[in-house]
Image (cartoon, rainbow over all chains, first blue to last red; front, top):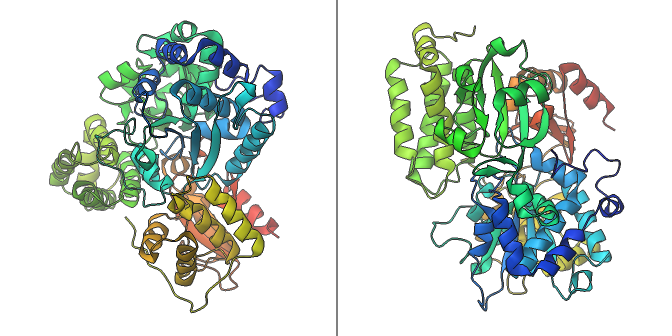
Length: 420
Length: 170
């Protein structure tokens, strides 16, 4: 079942002509026919949860925007795809940008927003060019502007390119960045639904979430809600990378067994299922699952949460038995140290300590006490910072020690990896 | 966190007329009383026009155009790693070594780049043609390993392929 990726295999799928020929922008008309309240109800009925990482129900998020508020309202699309392992939004941006634009127009109409911004990571230069061309075409054809499709609806859209900071994928860091500041996240509450961009009510949704909206309006929230499993409705794009025979972005119904995703879509684990060491199921911040858990787990929000990890951005990173788990964690810890914005002491200092300890352990100079020290540092970061980057840094360390403690011990005792 | 500081050249650059017009268009994307929002796009533009990096004077010039205190512009420029605060070569090669690329052989790719260019990560060749950087995830993980050269991504790399790519650059 393809929803977001339904057109990306067509020739010139990024063009307005191909999008229109396949029913493009008709959901805007349907949305206006339904009326704004009913659009929000449809999105609520669909049960779609945020596809960027946090998994918050999108319809509920829209309904939090205050009505009859004199301030302007804003829609910001998070296209700052930066969670290591994640590259699903990039294919929407470069192969079907109009689907995103249509989703944003519908959201704008439903919530009463007249200005949208797409915050795209700065490195996606070519993707931003293609997106800008699509926006220009949409303006020229009257899908965007002062009078959307002649229906008396006003919606403007602009791109804001990032500058290479992972933390701007955090919604309030993103807002700060659009305001022309360092992307340091804000304390919440107040939430962006009330005080967001320029101090005004703001909706922030991921690219994949917004690109799902045209189909939800076209087919109905109930139809979409019947896909997937309870509390994890619809389809999700998984970026499967690492040690599989066919890495790629795969859109499947939520609730699919991880083993099916890997074997039937991603070509199987390199060297066969028995060669699997573990899977990081939802981007680098999500704790790793051991091969044993991977054999039975299903890919939905609740199952993964129950297993002590998360669906996150849907980046499935596959590690086979050749991987030194200590080295993998050391690499990720270096990343979080680099990306900590520095405003909260537990994260700024903690990510540095995690990286230092992991690096020395990897070099064969760790001690058994270091393992407990790592856990202690994680406990002192988790929940003690303004944003989730601190927890994200702790995730790979905690998860790896939980699933592969004996490898950490081996690495310390022998000064090298068990995997050789 | 990275330590990043600004570098002075003693020369104040000026945007072309065309870029100045483009800057007026950039301001229009944001509410009239929110000119500071334009600082990032204008810094991107400045970097492209002023030789691939931003000197202290470039930052001061952007501050003046936007109407921001220079310190606020320094904050932005030093926070975001895409703003180069020292000169880079004509080809800025950024190789990802984060988890997905690492699993697919980015260490070997990085070694091949170092051997080919005869420089370490973070360095620029003497002829100022190449700067090599090791970077964090660039979001092309299913086509790992990958690198970015200026505006373009190069994916599914091998040690042979990177040498070919470098040789083919004009």
